[in-house]
Image 1: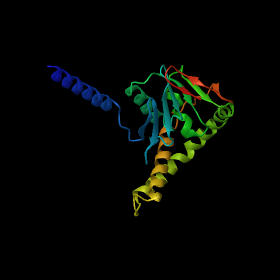
Image 2: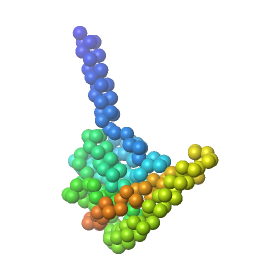
Image 3: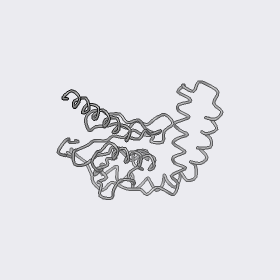
Image 4: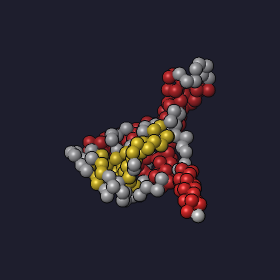
Length: 206
């Protein structure tokens, strides 16, 4: 009887483990990589619309996201992945610098989440994002058509660096085109200009 009970217990654990994995959605845009307990990297896939790589840290009572992608839609996938993993709510979002692929996912996270950067990065976002968004509305659709044509008519090795570059740029300009009129720039309001520790009951980020 003890053996049967133990077998049922093991089976239940395996079933729950499989169910947990099934609840984490697979993304066409990024690969989720567990680096350590509570620490994950989200790596842009070739042709994916994340464009940059992001990070997730489970602090215990809150989650921290690092560089939440170019596409708000893919940032929402990231947010859903955090929920699917059973991690706590996102309370911190860190922007390493002002480039569009590192900041435009800011807008999908809760209003009470702190958006963190250096003071200089926040200034550059506030200054340059309106200019870049206006410029992209003009050139992004044309660039998308150009790289789409290159991809459709490519005759060489699809594993080559040239083809992978075409796929990356096509995805980049597709995101810019899809985002026209849909970006609500969220400028960081919490600043790190020296060493800062964000501490939770399980982990800390320095």
